Structures are given as structure tokens and as C-alpha cells.
Image (cartoon, rainbow, N blue to C red; front, side):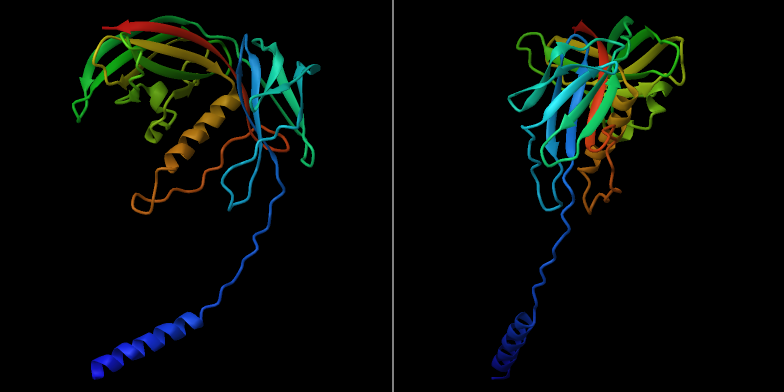
Length: 290
């Protein structure tokens, strides 16, 4: 009987505790929406821009902006008005190296924004040599060495290296992982801990000189494959955005068990809004690795 009384008392207490709860609706302040720009542009191509709006903390999908007027300036002179196609704004003109390009975006109900950047002079690879299986990591994965040689221009320069591997028979993308990199040019950036998908670096250690940089990478080959090298000369804004983007993407994989990281603000060069508008030039090479 006493056991039954205990159960009854628990039910009464639990019901009472539920009835004492009070639901409080918190009205979060709605921030003023801002225009968000997303554009990387290069030579001999139309400038392609995606426009969206900032959203509140409880929202998840930023709405596209499809009713904007987007004017393009080249070296300060208006030369074009972009047109909308499949969710992106395109220029009619093809961008050129060493020209300064800027956008002025006007959208109904939103503050107008302005952004500008330049396509740097192309840096050509003088040599590019891939040596297969120079190391083996702790998991038995083979590490390859890619040696790139080029002449750096005088003044601050910023670079990005992207690698793609495709098997010769089916053109299947096998994926690339940067592993065991020890070249001071690469390690001095402090970005390898973020497992970046590309490598970015500056010319602080070799300004105006010939440079030879060694990059170590792993792939998962089961046949001969094509190694595509995209060697980019990028603007300072491009470099700063990538720096923050690598850290931000890495932080998305953290949780309460691995340790939460500090909030990361992405770099932006948009006046009056957010996002990135950055130029680059690229020298692309393909090596057959057997």
C-alpha cells in the first residue's frame, strides 16, 4: 500500500511541476537586411555574381535578390549593366588583367552597396614536377611531391594552388589531401591545421625572386591519373577571404566533444553589405602520373 502511495505522490508532484511551467516568448530584434555578394572573377570571362540578403538568427535559407540593378565600372568608368540568368548576374564584357573592376548594386528596400577589386598579373609556372610515392604516412597512404618553380613579381603577391586528380580511363575524380607539408612557404601561413582544400600563401619570403616550393599531397589512385594544377595569382582580398573561410569551414565540424571553437567572422570587402568580390588569374597545367 505504501508503494502505491509513493507512486501517487510522484504523479501529483510531476503534474504540479508541469502546471507551474510558464512559456515565455522572446522577441528577437530583426536586423536590417543587407546585400550579400559572392563573386570570384578572372580574365577572359564574364563577371559572375550571386546576390542574396542577410537573414535572422532563426532562419536558415538566405533569399536570392533577383530585382537588383548592378552596374559595372572598369577603372572608375561605368561600362556595363549586368543581366540576370539562372539566379546569377552576368556582365556582357570579359574581364581583363590589371584592370580595376567595381560593382554598384541597387536593390529595392535595401541599402546600396559598392565593391571593387583587381585581376592580378598572371604568374606562369616555369617548371612543375610530380614525384610519386616519396613518403608513406601512419595509415599507409602514399604521399606524392609536387615541385613548382616560378618568378615572383616585385611587390606584395598572393598565390593559391588547387590540385585535381582524375583517373585516365574513366576520368573519375579521386580527391586530394594535403599531407606532411613542411616547406616554410606553406607552413608559415598557419592554415594547414584547418585541412584546407587548396593552399594559399604570400611572397613575404621571396618577394621579387625566383621561388621553388614543394607541396606534398595524397590521393587514392588505382590506375594512371591526370594531375591538374591550377596555379593562381590572387588579389589581397581573395587571400584574406580564403584565410577566414578555411578556419570557418573547419569550425563547422567541431562539437561539444571535440571542443567548440570561437566564432569566426568571414572577411568581406563589400561596402554597405557583406560577402566577397575578388579577382584572380590562373596558369593551369596537367601532368600524367603513372
